Length: 248
Image 1 (cartoon, rainbow, N blue to C red):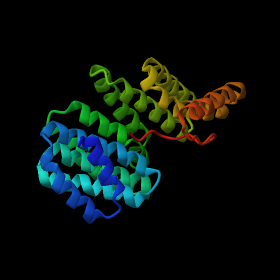
Image 2 (cartoon, rainbow, N blue to C red):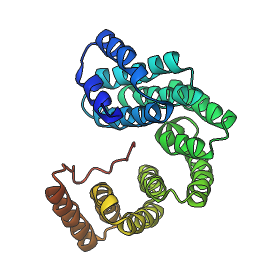
Image 3 (spheres, rainbow, N blue to C red):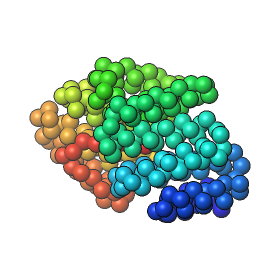
C-alpha cells in the first residue's frame, strides 16, 4: 500500500472513529519518509474537501492531529494546526481563532528550522491576516514569504502567493496592484508548463475580474475565455466574475 492509497481510504470514510482506527492499524507499515508523504496526501485531500464539506474538512484536520499523537513529530502538529486554521478561516470566518493556529504552526516550523514551512504558513494565512491585521501586514508577510520561496526555488508556491496577493489587492480596491501580482503569478504558472496549467484557470479568472474593474473589457473577455478553455480542457469548473484564492 502506498501512502497515497491509505490517504484516499481514510478520506473515503465518513466516521472519525473509523478513520482513527484505520490509521492506527496501518501506520506501522510505513517508514518516516512515507508517513511524511501520507501527511502531504492528506493535506491535498483536505484542500479538495474545503469546498465540499466543512465537516469532512474538519475530520481531516482532526485526523492529522491524531496522527501527530501517534508519531510525536512536531512537523505533523504544525500541519494539523495549518489545516485547523484553514477550517476556521475559510469554512466559518473565525479569523482571529484561525490566526492562533497559524501562528503556532509558524512557531513550530521555526523551532524545526523549516523556512519553507514558515513561508507556506504566511501564504495560507493571507485571508485571515487581511481580516484581522490589515492590508499592510499582508504586504509585509507576502514580501517576506516571496523572498524565502524565491531563495528555495519553490516556484509553484510563489505563483500561488502572487495569485492570492492579487486577490487581496482586489478586495481592498487596489486593482492595478492586483493585476500586477496576477500577471506575475501567470508568468510563473506558464513557466511551470504542465504543472502550472491547472492553476492558470483560477489565475485567468482572477485576471478577468481585475481587468473588468479597471474598465479594460476587451482584456477581461479574453482572460475569461482563456479561463473557460482551460477549465474545459482540464475538466475543471470556474466561477466567472468571482475572484478566488488558491488555498493549497
